[in-house]
Image (cartoon, rainbow, N blue to C red; front, side, top):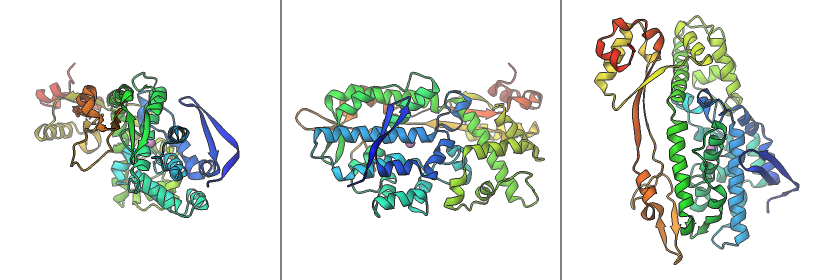
Length: 430
Ligand code: NI
């Protein structure tokens, strides 16, 4: 039996009002330096450049996911559902709390440049020589391995994994509400209390009672809206591209032995080298990266300095949206940029975004994301898109438009060097 705190701890939270901690292990995990680091990493990377309120941290999201998981489990326990494996409570709560612990600064952009993955780092932080590992091991020597298995979805019990990672999980329920709240938009809202009331454990799955179908439709519509209105916002994508180009340039310069950075702190050099220990990684945060970008805006390399100044002062790339960008247009764009004396490797980005709001389950599919099951009054299970026209139709919406990103200045000044067709595509004459 996991040790309980003598007095329950409470966090004030704008999304869930209060977050309650009763277990000593959870309290000790929150107080590790690896978990506290999440205060210095924003939940939505560069989205604050588009939605200025979106400065919330992965710390608040992680606590929120823990709280949603805690409420789900406590509902299962109150109802005395025999299909809920009671002994998995602490494992679920620890996994919910730690599921994002491996996120680095601006993860989505930096992971692309350095080929790292936050899932890998999560496992390394849970299994390695860390404070988190020591707290988990003190509760149960098997716990670190189990937590890493749950987060990597290889744990043997689907019901435990699906609470943390499925199409209706504690992670998504928290981030949709939290991101909507901080971005200041209405799209992401749905009735969490209602969803918590209509889910239950059933034969190894978490299922939704049929009467709760409309609450789930609402939740999936929220997800659909949040992706297109917030997460994929073209201005946010533009800032991510500028950030990615900064680190691509820095990596190139670091590799070319001739270049001497005027400013380069230890863990960032290790990142550029591609050799990071768990300790180096746990040092990295967004304060670090932002300080570096500020300093790099004074580097002698003109491309690095310019990109950093753009990021810092939000002089982002402009974009145009097209139905399709094929290889020949891409080649023309590159040639046009070169004719203007602009290096397309660092000043052009082409983006095509896709997301499935709900991944309709087809028998025989390799399951990418665990489906949502409905349970009817006769105790029959049906995959939710069989019953809901709304979910079936949003399940077939894939992607949007292609976007081309480029610096409006200096391209506009040099536009007479471009063929008329390209000036048209990039809308430089207007
Ligand atoms: Ni998360």
